[in-house]
Length: 334
Ligand code: CIZ
Figure 1 (cartoon, rainbow, N blue to C red):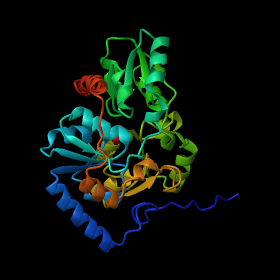
Figure 2 (spheres, rainbow, N blue to C red):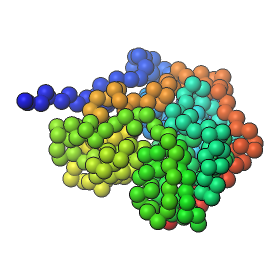
Figure 3 (cartoon, protein in one colour):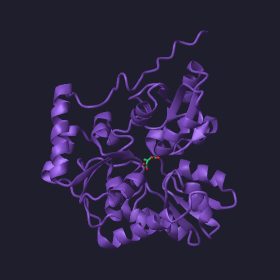
């Protein structure tokens, strides 16, 4: 039986998300936002998964930790964070004297919410001699109960750097299993959380896209399941995906296994290359609704009205900052 032709959508040519604003309305809003940012002494930070129109207006686009560090370093007194709640919290934790605004308070994260402070306390009681390594995609309360944080870019280095042999890795099970395989000298117990956007993808989905584009290079985020990571040519964080493309100068097509918002940055940096979301159907599986909850009207209103200000209780912020700063001190290739 012949396979039906597999439809591959181009997310940049025909984005299936974003606001219904006309080009003229977008231009007016962009002008208002730039003027307000100046007037309010604000820097606009946008995560790689945000809507293209939001990435376009931002002063800096990147991953959650990179943006939080930039927020601390820049001179502006207000950080307008276009991302999800835990990201704005991290920015506040690293820059406690600045005002941090999140335009839409409903922008949460299923992965961060898969572990609470109470459930981590229960796990710590079950594994009392384990060091707790927590992915930055977690709430401030959970970070505060952890020995050290990690990102997807430095998770293996962080685990390797610890004196303890026994590790409790939270909350992402896929990232935890990937790290455990990379650092076999450690005993890693992995918490049962995941990002549903990455976890839904199967190697079978990716192979279908690959069958239509056999020459393509597969780049996967380590939040993907092991069967996807196994068939990937590159496994890396969103920011590292931008440099991963440079390692394949001959390749024209890349299959990207992460939330589709990153394609905007990839396409901007490499306009001559083709990027296909690994599910082959942009807006179907690899679409995070929370990451698309901020639009230009919200950005403008957040600046105008100073909302929604993110606060982290001092004791929680202190513990979370300790875990983040310990991570920042770990050399990349430890
Ligand atoms: O932490 C981040 O920024 C996320 C969600 C992904 C990544 O690897 O950049």
